[in-house]
Each structure stands twice: as structure tokens, then as C-alpha cells.
Length: 243
Image 1 (spheres, rainbow, N blue to C red):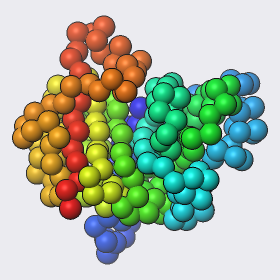
Image 2: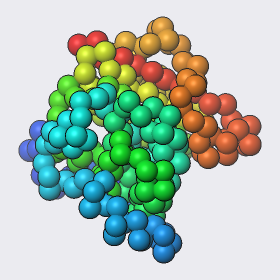
Image 3: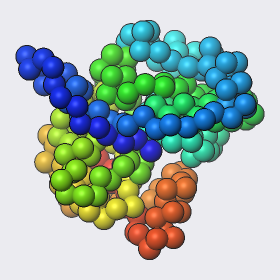
């Protein structure tokens, strides 16, 4: 899933959202060779299903050719769970964001195999996508499943869930929309709970300080299975935009 990398700010006069975008990136590009099938999917499926930063702010109804609730997932990894959700809930539109090209290629290959029309994908930094392409008040759900926990205390500042990030997401959600997180690291779950409980304009759907049960529609990911094999618990958090 998505990782974060700390880089130095070059322009200290940028607005707060731009500062966050430049100082804490949501990923580290990982080396990975694409399979022949993944590369073929990038060439043949991307022109129809791929989205680019250069398109600017999107008209989501036009992108999907219909009006429907839009779910955006940040860091979908190899995309298997996103494919499963799109198959099981065809009444929803899905946008996936992932910087790892083999993961994007695998997703697109499976989109073609399954004949899905309700998925679009970015291969870009999620922070830049949110800032440049996603209209305010447009999303029904934002998903962040098993992000890098940066478990060493000195790296906690690299965790993607921070107050500035929560505020960015709040603007993109419709009122009543949900930010759904999941992690298999207890310390990160506690960090998420602390940040989101302090973030203005949100309500914990499970009640103050409470974690949510895993909903039936969230597939068990490979990250979850790995965590469970290691004896980790799994924590879901669901926060609703209230204003």
C-alpha cells in the first residue's frame, strides 16, 4: 500500500494544503517489473479507464457516463479488493489511486477480464489528485486500507493520516460521506483514532472512541491476512462528514 516520504519544502510561502502536499508525500516509489499482461493492460485499457492530473478538475458524472455514488480508494496496492468491491456493488462508481505501476497494470488487466465499467484509476500521488482533480463535496466514501504504519516513533510524522490530510478529505466528501480506514497495527489504529477524533467536521460512526466492525463489503486483503498470520488484530475506523 501507500508509503510516505519526507522531502524538504522549497517554498515556505505556499498555502497550508500546498505545504502538506510538498513536505509529506504519500508514497515511496518502489521498483517492480511489470508482467507482459500488466503492460498490455496499461497499453490497451488505460486509454479508456485511466485518469490524468492534466485533466484537471473532473466532472465525475461525465467520467463514468452516469450519476452514482463515488467511492475513492487511496493506495489500492495490486487492486484485488477494489475489483471485488466494484463487482459486488455495481451501483457505485470507483476511483482508485496507486503509484505502483505493476499494481495499476494488474487492476486494469482484471477490469478487462471482469468486463467492469465502474472503475477509473490514477497512477499519481493521491494528494495531488485530490487537490487538482476531485471536486469538493463529490465523494460518498474515501477508503484508506492498510497504509504503511511507519511503526517507529521517529517516523510517525510520515503517516498519511494527519489533521491536514483529514481536512483535505473532508472537503472532498459530501456531507454524510464517510472516511473509512483500516489497519493491522494497533498503534496506528490508536493514532488514527486520536487524529480523527480531533479533526473538525467529523463524527465517529461507531461512537466516540470506538472502532467499527469490519463491514461485510470490505474484502479481506492480503495485508490483512498477513497481519492476522503475524498475530495482529485488525481495526476499522469510519468517520462521517458532518459539516
